[in-house]
Every structure is written in structure tokens, then in C-alpha cells.
Length: 109
Length: 113
Image (cartoon, rainbow over all chains, first blue to last red; front, side):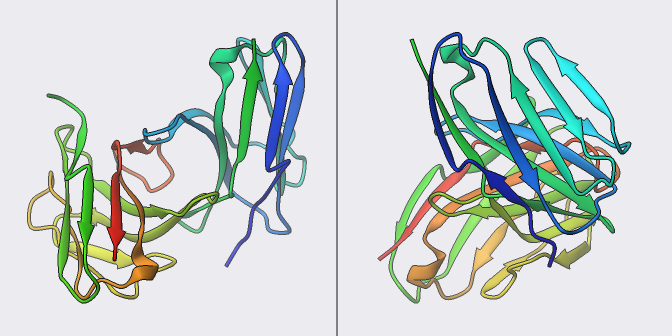
């Protein structure tokens, strides 16, 4: 079983601050996805990264896939209360996906 | 309504009872998945299906049964519910390949007393 460790588990910040959350594994993944989940709802895909070293930007969110395709990071600039939620990473390998336990982000106004 | 729906949204049952959770998608996606999410944890794959009449085990299949007689439906049955199966269950679908974007339903919160 391939494991994905996400850190930190919980993060509480003020509006306007920057933050980075991490997704790490000892295994290599063919691609990695980041999802955001709000309370009472299912996860929603934010981005898929495929190439080692790849960087993708989605407005204030920057996603990076590690060179060795074992880890990834999500950086949020000038966080807003609307960014509050559970951020999940999911690694894809051999046709199956493995989810991390997530980072619960709270952005206070 | 278009999309992926789950029913019921909430279910309370007793240990030993059989429970079926329903999942329906209107996109004609080939792949469908069942996950469970326990408090404070991510998603764990129970079963998935690549097409009608094709199913395969995920990470935690014990105690669960699935079927897929039609492309749009993928019911999950707990044959004899146990307290450890108390969880939130999510159904998802993707268009073609297993690693395509997965679209998740709203979830079913199941409590086994």
C-alpha cells in the first residue's frame, strides 16, 4: 500500500496570510491530484500534476510536483475565508488512487 | 438533475442488518468508485468499476458487496453491518481512465448502532 502523508494536519490562519501544505510519500506516483472538500460535500478536484518538477497556478493557488514525483506542495497566497476547507492530495499509480488524510485549513476574517 | 447523486443522505441502522447505499450518475461515465471517509481521515477506496458488469476490489473491500448491472448505477451493500462501518460513504465517477478527474457525490452518512 502506498502511503501519502499530509502536513500539517490542521492549520488556522488570518485572512491575508500565505500558507503552504505538503503531501509526501516514499513512493513514486504517475500523477498527483489536489482536491478541496467543504463540510457536508464531496471533494472537488483543483488540479492534476503529471510531470516531475511541474508547477501549476490556479489564481492564488500554486501547486508543485516534486522532481522525483514522490511529493507535492500547495501554496496559497493571501488566503481568504472562502479558502477554508479540507485539502486532500491523491496519488495515482498502477491504475489506482491513494488519498492522504488531508489538511484542514481555517482562514479567519 | 445532471450529475452524481447518492441516496439516502443519512442512514442509521443496527449491527447485523443489511444496508444498501445507492449511487446514480447521468454522465454515462465508464468508471465508478466507492470510498469511505472516517472522521479526520482521507478517502479509502472500497470498490471500483470500469464498466457495467466489471468490478474490482479497492483498499478496504471486506464486508461490502457491489454490483453494476447498468452503467449509471453502482449500489454498495453492507451485508451485515458492523459498528466499524460507521462512516461517510462517497461515490464518484470518471469519464474513462482510472486517473481522470473523479466527480464525487454529496456522500451518505451511515451510523451503525
